[in-house]
Length: 511
Image (tube, rainbow, N blue to C red; front, side):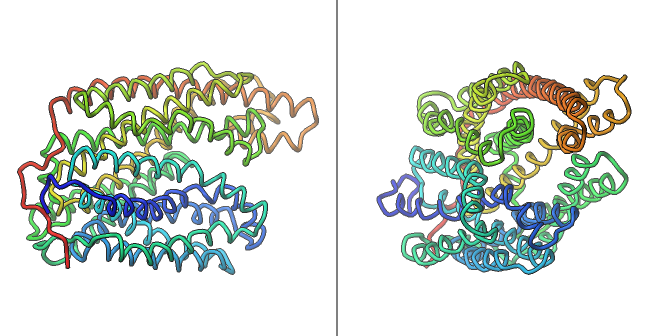
């Protein structure tokens, strides 16, 4: 198959098939938001078990992405996708009918394994099916829109299902889609694998897992509970294993990750831009969710429905990015998209306790639209700047960096917000109300429900003003970060083209 061959109807239909696993894997990150109270009541979940039910999926997913991307290069991307579909479907049934917290945690871990096989396979297959640069841009714009749509729709769909069915339904919705994928994929999706990939690097896989898991766990622990010895040691240990992993890739006969990819500015610069974009997007989502629910007093379902409003702006962002990149140097389009995202954060600096919902939602919409444009173009640059036989591992590296970006967004912007919140709480408050207020807006809201009306009003008013102030501070930091990234990304990516360097032989379809 030549590199200039254009995709036909079959490839575009196959792209729709690839949207199935992508939509479900991205939804599975957020679909649990409403289900946890029901699960806790039914299974008797402790606070620690609740955290593991939430986090184990993301931990396993992030830890295995590089391994699964490399494995797909060797055994075939379609084959790995089908294995992942079976695992994801079975794990979904196991989660839906879990009888205790331990079973549910184990099922969520299996879902993470399935998700790690599905995510890099979808992007790698797009790289293999769409060789024409313009068509590939359009396909990846669709991929980006589906992924963002899944994250946004997860809470809404979860809330709807829980109003009509039991909590297991939020998992069971995965199974019919996985069955459909198993039926359609062998017919519509071609098989691709690297002819000379060599033996699978088991030691490299173990080192990648040992590098990624402790770092992400440590970052999330610090974000949730503050710095302590164990998370810091975990991060340090993970970084040590990261150095060992890189050394292994330098010396292995058949490495999991070709480190020469990082010498390509289109690849490494786009990878950095994607990481910062994810950091900014996830960091804001944490604050916006609390603002809608705890400052404006919306129910979780109403907050989720209102959060769909920015989709009006986001819906056209990916196609617009693709169209502009066809006429301008993509570096300037990416830089402009970061400026657009920064303007969204700029709007959020003006949010107050009594602001109309239009203000935070407009800011969130501009932020998301700009970052979707960024992610669409940098994703295309990342997969387009490597040879097709490296598409699986390149996709896995990108998605692993996205996981790091999300964790850092919660940790860094969350820590800044916490510091600003506590600095805004008056120091002369009576001890009876000072403690719950300083513990954060959720704690203050919970405590207010057990206080006399006048004290409750004082607690809520003080906490809401402090939280909104902290949200403004985080938005200001986000604005400056994104403007700085706009400049550095434009300078780094200017003049680059997403073509493999050095040029490598084209990947041939597997029989």
